[in-house]
Image (cartoon, rainbow, N blue to C red):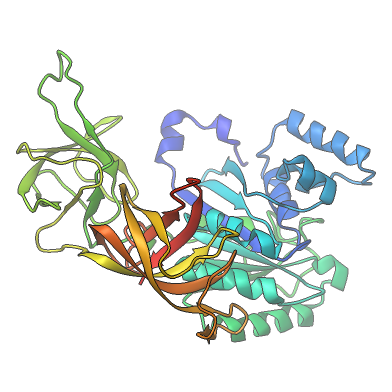
Length: 428
C-alpha cells in the first residue's frame, strides 16, 4: 500500500531519504503523461485533482483521462499539449520521498532542462519507441552527463504503438549504448514502458513478458544515491550569521548554511576562508537541537569556540583539505539568454553564497551536442549553446571542480543590468 505524502507523520517524513529526479526527452515523447501515470498509479494525487483533470480532458475531447494535465499547468501548455516551463511535483512511498522536475522537450527550452536537472540525482530520458534515439535524446543525455548526474534511466515509451516488440527495445538500447559510451554517466538502466497504458511504470506489464527487469517506480525507490555526495572534502559555505541576542542565547553566535562536502563533528579543527584563522567546532545545531555530526546536504548552524570575523560568502574547511583559491576560473557554460556571450563581457558571478563581478577573458570553444566535437572557429555562445570559457573575478573564490563537488563546483552568471540569470557554469 503506497501512502500519499499527507499520510506520513512529520517525523517519518523528515527521516525519509529524498530522491530528486528530472524527466527529459523530445517533444511528445510522453514525459508529462509518464509523471501523471506515476502519480496516479502510486495513489499520490487527491480525488479533487483527478476530478479536475477528468473534466479538463472531456472539454478537450479526449476519450480517456489525459494524465499529462497533472503537470502541464500553464494554459499555453494545455492548449498546445506540450511542456514549456519546468513543473515540480512531490510524492512519497514508504521507502523514499521524491521531487520530480518535468522539463520541456523543445530545443528552445533546453535552458529549462538545465534548470530542472541542476539539482537532480537521477535523470529519466524518454524515447519514443517509434522514432528511436533522436537529436534531443543525445542533447539531454549530454547535459545530464555535463551536470554530473550519476544515474540515468532510458525509458522506451509508447511500446504499445509498436506491439511491445522486443527487437524495437533492443535496437534503441544498442543505439543509446553507442552514444553514451562517450559520456560520463556511471549508471544507465533501460525500461520498456507505456505511460498511457501503465506498463512497467508502477506495476509490471503483462505485455512485455520478455522484460525481466524492475518497474520504473521500484528502480526509483531503490537506486543508491547516498554515495553520490562528496563525504571527503569538508566544505561549509556560510550563508548567514545567527545572533539571537535574546535572554536565553545572549552570547550565541552561529553560522548558518548547507554542508556541501565532508563530515563535520564537534571538536573538529576548522579553517575560515579567506581570513585563514582557525578554530574548533563547539556545537552543530539544527531545528531539532544539537547533533553529533553533519554531512551533505544538511542545513545546520555551526558554533565555533573562538570569535572569528566570519560573514556571508566565507567558507569553513579542514586545514589539511582546502579548496582551490583563485580569481581565474575555467568553466563549461550553458548559455541561457538570447543575447550572446562575448569575450570581454562583464557579469555578476554567484558561487555558493558568494557574489562578485567578473569579466569573460576568452571563449575557448563551443560543443556540437550531436557529435560532441569542439567548434573553435565560432567563438560566441548563443541561447542554449554550451562551451568552455575563462573568467576572471574581482575577488578570490574558494572552489572545487564540478566533477568532485557539484555544490562548490557550480556558478551562475547574472546580467548586471537586468538581473537575469544568463549562464550556468560547471568549474573544470
